[in-house]
Image 1 (cartoon, rainbow, N blue to C red):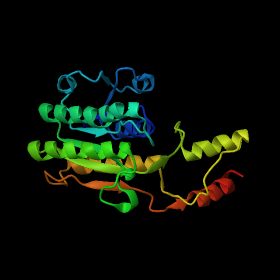
Image 2 (cartoon, rainbow, N blue to C red):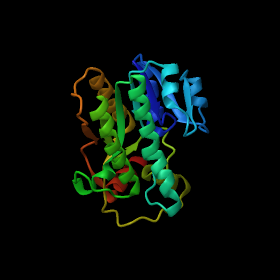
Image 3 (cartoon, helix red, strand yellow):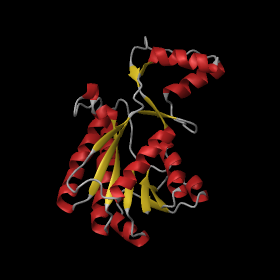
Image 4 (tube, one colour):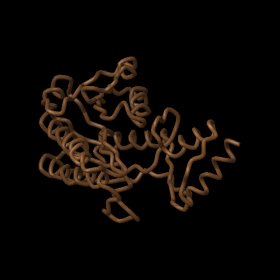
Length: 249
């Protein structure tokens, strides 16, 4: 297949793109105009740069035809300030909405969207933990129009916490690794919060499965299924810290 990936320079994107290539797919990366794409270029991934206003339909048509889009890109903020509101709306609603519009106008048949477990606080169908989660939900409301009006096929994979080699984010395991190396203490809470960590290759396998099922037409039109990508094994931070201590010594 011929597939566009957004967020290809991010942690999961750097795992997903080579897996798609190994499976025989032609992968294109849709990136910000200022993005560093040296690694993608070395891997032979064609680049489509977006400045936020350009006609994505023209880009899709010029480089296509494409079978589908895997949308990983987002602006993630745990808490936001007033000046963050517009960037959150732009990155998480406006940008993917422009992608959907380009899809239906250039004949792209399906989209794999990335949601977040933070849209579903305490297991609710919808209860946003923060504004980031609310923008992800708002985009799904926009997407429903394109699914119902144009027959675009769309599935959302809701991710929780992910980890694996090559992760440069300031996530918990990385912070602990830094503490282990430097000896500088890390102030933490009592550690009663629960966390579900999913290894990067398992996340990638979920995306590959979604792509195959969408291409095969497993879900009827006007259906927008959401799947939670989880390990099924939750730890408290206190329990996870004990595992980390045992593994690392």
